[in-house]
Length: 67
Image (cartoon, rainbow, N blue to C red):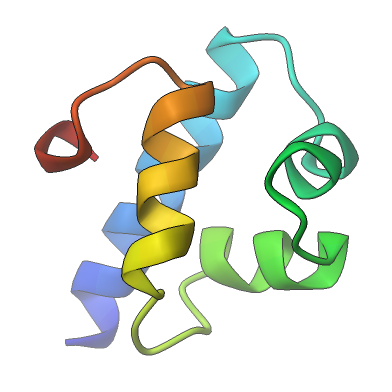
């Protein structure tokens, strides 16, 4: 399960960097802490909230299932 979280985190990093955003930018836009974004990207959060995933999909301009 941890490997899946790490893969997901790497994907989030790739998407964020392609969009030219920093963790701080994402954190501010979706109203989460920069620390939480970092933990999510490192695969340290066991499960992200649906609300957070929806917000990420919006700012990354992706369908939530594409995340």
